[in-house]
Amino acid sequence: MRVREHPPVVAENLGKRYARGWALRDCALEIPAGRTVALVGPNGAGKSTLMGMITGLLRPTTGRISVFGDAPTGRGMHPAVAFLTQAKPLYPQFTVAETLRFGRHANPGWDQAYAEGLVERAQVPFAAKAGTLSGGQRTRVALALALGKRPRLLVLDEPLADLDPLAREAVLRTLVDECRAQGITVLLSSHVLAELEDVCDHLVLLADGRVRLAGDVSSLLRAHAGQPGLDRLSRLALAYMRAEVAA
Image (tube, rainbow, N blue to C red):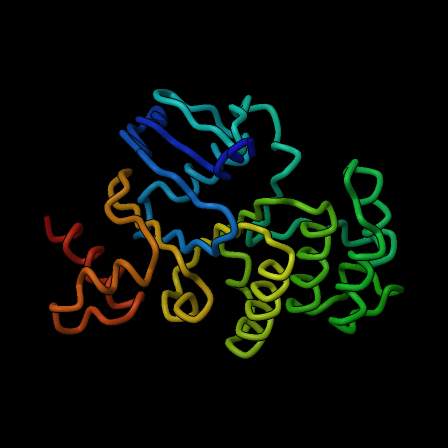
């Protein structure tokens, strides 16, 4: 009998409270394997808090969360998870080659040949120092670091926000194609809803610290087919966010 694999993320009654109040509350969520998931919502909706708990950098106040069946401890990431933020922290004095060697020493499951191949295809020079790279090149190296550990879940918090539109499009398409080829589940947070339409097949919408909409994009669009103007992911998400702000 085949053992059922645990989903990448399952949350039940999940909540996180800070001194200023609840950032996330009564969150129930399951992220299916092998999907590219758009995590959207207005500022303060709880997106970064949710990603912090998925990556094990934050501990829940209430409820539970599991990542591939394991409960994050709040003291570090699950070995099957990679996390990349807009900051893309690279040591500016390291060359690209030294950066990849650092990745090899820091990650037990590191695939040096694969990481180097990603950098080569992006045409980023290995001898260049990270501090001298363009924004697009830094993003490519940071993605090579994240993917080089061979994760099963890649969590991305606005990683393309500092790139121009053409670079965003090229990097996002390359990233999604690579993750689909490798069977990696992607959780992508972005304020640019239009850029998610052609790459994301699952949607999670947060507002006021709660999950307001979640499911396969195709199913959600079919469910709203009778409502004018809700025929695309960006329009559907924006309509829900407007409704929450007006409530």
